Image (cartoon, rainbow, N blue to C red; front, side, top):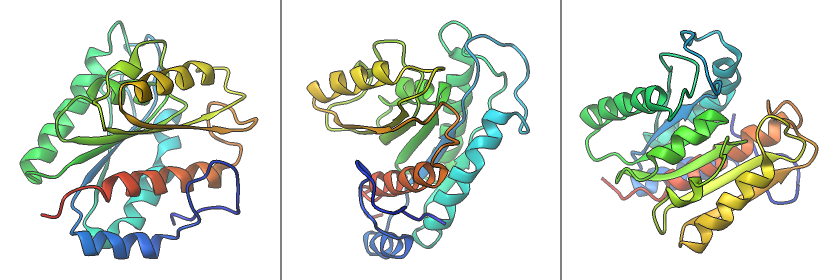
Amino acid sequence: MCRVPARAPNVLTDTLPKPQRFLARMMGMTATVLVLPGGKPNSLQRARPWHLSSVRMRPFTSAIREAGADSGIHVVQVQYQVRGWNRGGSSAITDVRRVMADVRRERPGAPIVLVGHSMGGRVAAHLAAEPDVLGVVALAPWWPGGEGYLFRSAQHLAVLHGTADRWTSPDASRREVVAASRRGVRASWTPVENAGHFMLRHPARWHAWVCEEALRIASLAPSQ
């Protein structure tokens, strides 16, 4: 379940799923949440559901789906064709665009929230300009530079990054959040002290924070 852990710095609230679901029902929320796993900088190996990058995101997908069940929120975890970003990320971005197109056909008018880890956070940034993307929740995102300029003014962006991450840079993601904020993006950056890239330290906090942020952004969807 989407549970907020005991009081900790920089965590949004101690709200439990039931009030979130009540708010969602009152607003007639119909947003779709797409969960984007991580990957590799370069790899043409076919992505499989049992790869750790996909397996690690399933608890997040399940938590958001369960918490949003009464609200009509639709949750999909994306499966890439190949594992790598590969010079520009065209393959991964195309994979997510294809899922977004399916969502638009099946749920016309439904806004989209993107939740991405590592490479998935980079893919999400590159798709943030899509007009129906309400916002992005990024976990330990791989943002080498310039991603803060890909978000629309007044869009919502929430980033959570472990301070001990050695795979992606927490300093870099914080710089991009600052850059986005200066352009009018409603952006926040929250550290998880001593946590690494795979979100194994304080896992309950990661799961609760992502669930809360995804539901918070989804709650901004207009009534249908």
